[in-house]
Length: 290
Image (cartoon, rainbow, N blue to C red; front, top):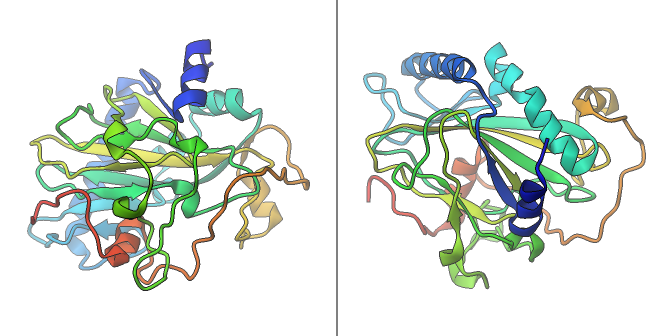
């Protein structure tokens, strides 16, 4: 499924954008379901197991910055997480594919919250780094509505410190203390229905959406069958193997010489990266309030 050029770009840069993976009908269904969840958020007063709310959220003006684990709350999201083209792309990279989890980041028009610079690898290190997140663009993404920004080649570098001033994990790098040129970051742009694939160690973030247009980004995490989480899998081997989408199950994790920093002690604020990053004590991207 991957062209030679796409494979070379992924190996070199740590991310690619693949157009036209989801049809207009599939994107339309995902948008309708998402709109329903946002409307229903009017009945929710605080973050819970489904919703991560914007700080400006109110019953009169429901504002959602993330749906947590969307594949568990609606069949349309579940189908998207098992999209055959997505699975085929990842199988081309690794030979096997196991699902992990997902989230829907809602960069709402005019106030969609930023995500500070980070590496996904800091949150869930495995025995090897054949892991990636696939982002499904539910809206057209351009430079104005808060695209994901990725530093090319950063997936081949170090794992940066994602701990806050209190010594606890906070899910955000401190740009002032990291030896990386963030000005080199490139935006992931595309039409609705396009997908991004970014390596688990790639440094990335996204600015506030100050535009008048939505930028909803449905993200699913995947790993090779022989990549096992270092912090364990609490639901047991049977549930772990139920997540296998391509290839054969194995009891032999592949151990690779990759840099690891454990996300311990755990973040003071749990639930999502937005909550984790509250304790970072620093901001790179301006917020709507600012």
